Every structure is written in structure tokens, then in C-alpha cells.
Image 1 (cartoon, rainbow, N blue to C red):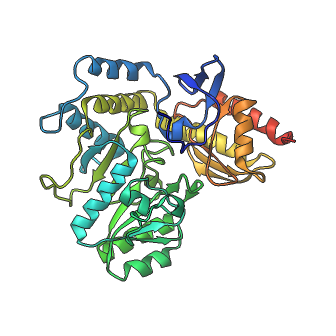
Image 2: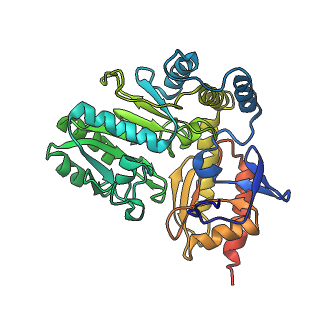
Image 3: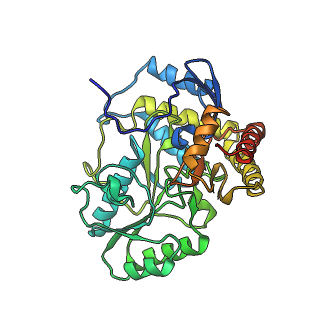
Amino acid sequence: MNLFNVYPLFDVNIVKGKGCRVWDDHGQEYLDLYGGHAVISIGHAHAHYINKVSEQLSKLAFYSNSVVNTLQSELATRLGKACGYDDYQLFLINSGAEANENALKLASFKTGKSRVLSAQKAFHGRTSLAVEITDNPKIIAPVNANGHVTYLPLNDLKAWETELEKGDVAAVIIECIQGVGGIRLATETFTKGLEAACRKHGAVLICDEIQCGYGRTGRFFAHQWLGIKPDIITVAKGIGNGFPMGAVLISPWFEAVFGQLGTTFGGNHLACSAALAVLDVIESEQLIENAEAVGTYLLRRLQKMHYLHDVRGRGLMIGFDVESPASELRKRLILDEHIFTGGAGINTVRLLPPLCLSREDADQFLSSLEKLLANPAK
């Protein structure tokens, strides 16, 4: 049997990691400024993370959600305090797409409506509802195109208000910093106005914090820079530092009903131990503060660099445009400078490093980038 060939791959086999570094099967070291799509939050192979997960694995890896799992309650308490939403409710699942699926279901149950407003260039996942609200027709199969979604320009408040006034909207979902969409930031004026319009017209406001959340921007959630309080928050990626996990943070005005939502693997013992270890390290090593400090330094240095256009972002979620296809620059960074970065569209480079990135790591990247920009590929 062969693999189903849906991923264009760099010819690099990564076999080991530590902090912000990874190594291939030939022993070559790389600086990781992408963290596997923002998944690696506290760094590769962190000792505390390894110990906590190994300890849990030696006792019990999994049992079903039909019995008490005190790790879930502990995680809910810890996460609530860490992010400032201790009055919210927590539903644990396995991925970001699944988090958005359940958020939309809750909104539709609550309102009795089915239309969703989503931003142009949004990415919310690849499962049925999540992909329908993702603005990429190439990945929406006919079975997913069910007419539930209206795409609107990010930061065009009037367009969103006009649609909400029609009274048939169940949910509004936004990424306060779009990731796949190119590191595009929602403005405070837009998000505050959108929140008010949702309240006025009875729509549920969902913030997708799957990529931009969990401390990446220098606050626990990206929307906390904008002074809003969504009804539902979805998280994944950085929550487990590589262990597949997602979660939905749900306003207290939603009432749980037995059987309304469910999952086999969500919130299992190993996942919860991983998530608790992540919170331990984020707090003890002040990684959110580090993300803001190092991210601000990196952003300012990039903004002064020749040959880069529209440098943007917040914390350790940064994008910039180059004149030639970004894929060529990214390939040279990997093969010549041994640095991993990400892409978003034809000309955009996307940086999503572990939150433990140091200023020295940033300087290494800046030096390598300057060298490549000054010497374009022939």
C-alpha cells in the first residue's frame, strides 16, 4: 500500500527535536520557526512534558467518557484561570476542525438558525461544517457545499451588520488573526462593532483561536487584544504541544444537554496530561511574556529589512510578503540555511515558532534571511 499523495513534501526526514531545534535523519540541525503549523507551543521534547505524559502512559492511556476523569476537571480549572474565562464551560475533543464543528452545532442548537457568517480568506478546518465556512473552493466538495455560509471581507463592519440585520444568522466566526489567510489582523473597531451587532441580532460570536491562541500573540487569546468577549472560543494546536487535542470554551448561557455533543477520544487521559504539562510550562517559563517580547523584537527588525513588504503580525505570529514566490525563499531557507518557515499564499512567508524562541534564535533567522534576500536565487 502507498500513501495517499495529498502533501507536497520537502525532502527532509525530521527525526528529533529539542526546544526550537529539530534534526533530520542525517544529523543536520534546523531552526524551527514554524512549529508544525503552530502546534509546538512549549518547544520540542520538553523534559516536563515528557515526564508528565510518560507518567500518565505508565498508569492509564485511555478510558471512555462514560466514567469520571478528574484530569478533565483539573484541566478545566487550570485553563479557565490561565486564560481568564473561569466562568466558561469546557468541551474536549481531538482537533481544531472538530472544535469548530461543535461550536457551530452549539450555535445552531441555541438559536434554531443555520446561516453562518465567515470572513473571506478564512480557514477553519477540513471536516464538513468547518470546511464549508473555509473560504477555499478547492477543498470544498459538493457534499460540503450546503449553502450555510456567507463570506464577508474582514474589517468591513457594515457588510457584516447588513447580513446580521436579516435575522437568520446562527453564528459569526472569525480568526482575530488569520493564519492560512496570510496573517491578516482584525481591527478593534471591527471586532467591537461585530460583537455589538451579534448581541443585537441574537447571533453567536465564535472566535477561532486554533492558530492565533494559546499565548502565541503575547496574550492568551488574540481577541484579548481587541477588548471583546466571544460566546464560544475554539482552541487546538498549541494546547497539547503535538498531542492531538482540541477544545471548545463555552459561555455560561449555554446549557449542556446529555447526548447533545460527544466524542470517543476527546479529553482522554493522555491528552489531558499533555495539556496540563503545557500549562505548567507556559506559566513557569513565562512563555506568553516571551512571545510578546521576542515577537515584538523580531517584527520590528523585519519591518526595517529591505526587500520585504507589509510585515505584519503580533507576538510570535508574523507574516511578510516577498516579490518572488515565497516557496522559493522558504526552500532556500531550509536547504541552505537550515531554517523552517511556513507559507500563506503565493508571496507570504509565515512565522509560527515555539513560544520559547529566544532573541538569539531570532537573530540567527534575521541574519540568514538578510543574506538570502541580498543574494537572490539565479
